[in-house]
Length: 258
Image (cartoon, rainbow, N blue to C red; front, side):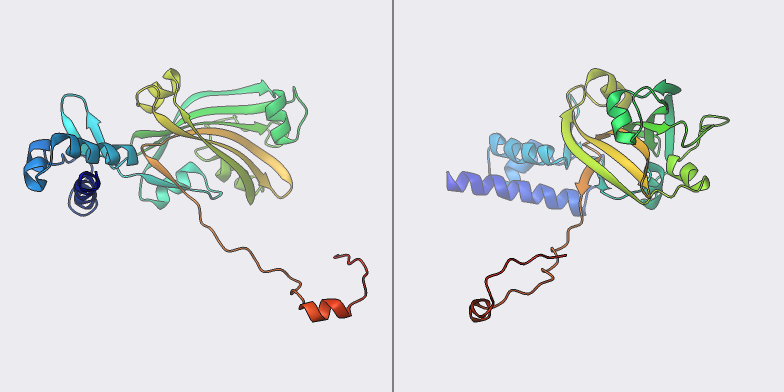
């Protein structure tokens, strides 16, 4: 069993190196026969190695054609930036397909997210977001009408954040909730992926100071995005710990930290 696992790992690591350093997105990988001859393994071992890289998103199978290098994934960094700003930062051309733009009454969940009363009027903007002409995400956003009057007057803004800045509302912090899901039939068609494909769902509240100005729900293609979260070590406690002898010398009184 150990030798079988080792053979599978060798093939997998070879293909990963090939994809990373030699092949480009859309290139075909060597055939099963070639890999079997090269490593002296069975077709089952080769398929196990390929399956692992398909699950990782490095390879993609196309029915009747073969196995190819998957498109490069975009890192979905948890930062307060618009879709357009993120795509431009990566050298890609952003665009949007507007599905609907209307004024609606805020439902209780939307009202709660925007700190307004249920039934108050909000701008609702539903779009497919594209990069270099390819659908990458579906985004639905809501903004309070009283906060941004006339938001839909004239051409729709390319960037919600850009329009907020133009009005003197600087988005400076927010809250994201990220979850994984399987895409339904309607969204699958908009994203040009098969029904049931994995997607990332991101719910965001965006604030300008203490004002909740945008609430959005987005669905990202998991085959084109990988979640990237920068981390930092927690700060040390402000009050240093005292030694046992020092604690014993102190009177037994309760401490209150202000």
